Image (tube, rainbow, N blue to C red):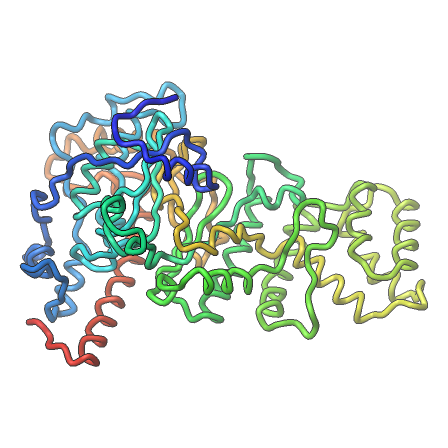
Length: 510
């Protein structure tokens, strides 16, 4: 069993058997972080220190009345340049591995967007309980799993991540007390208060459908399942629930996570989270379930809208790319989803007489034979509804609903590195998900090589503009997208807080 110095929490060890982690040991780590000793952040454009702008002497958090320019400056602070004692990327070699502890250390020191991550979790420029009482869980390089970590400041989090050099870390809920103090507060006083509403789409749930790949492998054909899922769920969350701040993130291998960051979403309790997940869940049942879509008519507007989205992709993504019913044994899966036995028998005869037909042809024969009147008992409306159900069963998003239902569920942080592929868990632009290619996502070793290449090319030009390391790499557009998302979220949060303060009659601070 791997060893790590620190408290072993038996209760947390039991919790580690949940789907959140397969690690062998769970610890509560008390590294003795110096909360008050962190230096103030450097700011741009002459804006005062963020801590000085927002922190009261008594530890409460209030806002001064900022101008639009000051807000923009506060939310656009660049990452600090790396310190001189950080080794250059060229000193690290991956030995052909996807990741190594050395590669991860360089990534955290020079590329990870800690400032934006802090502001995303905190929702404001200076620390609030949304950050200080937030659980962070680390998986170390030796697979030790550390639960209930929390940090007083952005600097403290950054220093500890670099010190621990985890293979990944996960984001949990905001608790009613500091997670590090959970052993010394009353049990009833330690409970989760809020967390982003999250959704998990994993290619594993499509394995019985996809024919191009299996297991951990993916390609552009089966990635279409994820693209379509993003389109369907994103519009449902925005149009049906009114959510605005939805961050989609590549899982690093074969899936995507959605983080709904609106305050209303973060404050949902477990009952309401289950209700949202159930509302969006249409495909139900495991591999042994013959028919996974069973809907009442007339269709709910969610389903009607989803079908309109799915129809655009069904022919190419399912009939052509996956060709799921080409083989005779596969035909039976389709026939079991159709309602008329006589029609099914005629379809079977036709397909046997014309072997090696594509799924596109077999799908077309359904309507062709139905129009010929081969079955006197055929109900045209019932057949149309059955075909709609087939489209939904094969292409509607397959949710891992348990991830969404519980407030205390942990989910891998954006910009972590997937240990199996070495790829960065980057954001996906939900406005254009079809432009995202998981094979183009940079790996940690690639990023380090890109820094080397940039520095070598620009070394002669000493007068060139000083860039943050991420700006020298293909990670730049993903960091900039995340930064814009976080800035928009923070601006709305600050605006809402001012409105609440005015409604409550609280004076504005200038």
